[in-house]
Image (cartoon, rainbow, N blue to C red; front, side, top):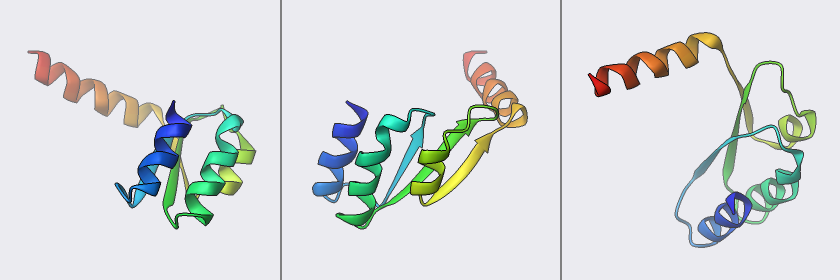
Length: 82
């Protein structure tokens, strides 16, 4: 459903930048369509060590998810719980 949502929402001009958190190269065709057919930007975020080079090369930008980022997210989530 992520690929379908990316395409449908791009067609509706509902976003300028898609942020994909994945290492699944099956998204490559959807990313290409979103970028080239709809002129959208696609940011790719992946956990370090799980690089899907097909995705990295087709996306507009690549951002590794580091332990520091994950720790920061957990701190924010813990503050909201408490």
